[in-house]
Image (cartoon, rainbow, N blue to C red; front, side, top):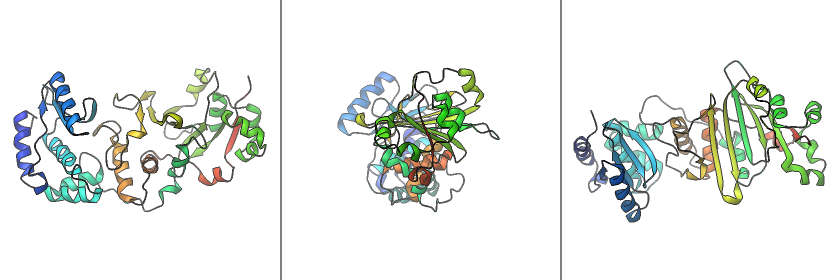
Length: 341
């Protein structure tokens, strides 16, 4: 069924009648132009921070935004639209994730399943995690916020059946070839005491875990990627970059696949946007798989209160990112300083 103002209004009346929590919840005003939308969104934002605003295109696409600019969904499906409006309304009543899921269950059991899945449908069964998330990638999340052990956590993956050579990658970035050839470990760099303290920002760690090759570093030396042919020969198909600038409270996530950023044209993706219980990315967009993983992390691990830890666990569950905790703790991870010019 095509979305129009009439079909949306009629559908919302039926939906609101199915649950007492929605009795007094009005359908958000539906704007038909950008100018009308911006005017209404600014008024709504001033009156009630974070309220949902709707814009209906001529082709029947309904956009949901928090405030004038941040789009959280775009759909041409009436049921999806009603679900997302109801979910937003019930969240505003407060309560934990299970309470929200229970309320949606009472409206429609499929909606309760949909909420628990984190996606826009309720297909498939997601198994509970069943293990300690801090034993995977999430162990590093807390210290990473303070740029420890490194500012940038970069991961690289090749096509199935191939691997990205960790040594070649480190050398391409500018790692000291003598130290790489000697198999220097992080503990070897740290053994220099004061010298390592002075040079730690010129160091990197590298290796493989979970099917990905990782390269952790602070400052990248001039000349990185200078040999484009050598970089292409590594066969990299996917890369994930997590970068922290704690002094400015900026923490970004970048995912590249086949040389293209996966971001639904949102631009810089800051982790600070993620708030527990809210999908960090466009619903139904290219990163919806991560929305689903975040919701599972939240439901599976209510004991984990840090949003960064939950987000990192979702990255592990959805993309397979890992870092060897024991190797870092014991200093066994491969390491090197950048080569001197």
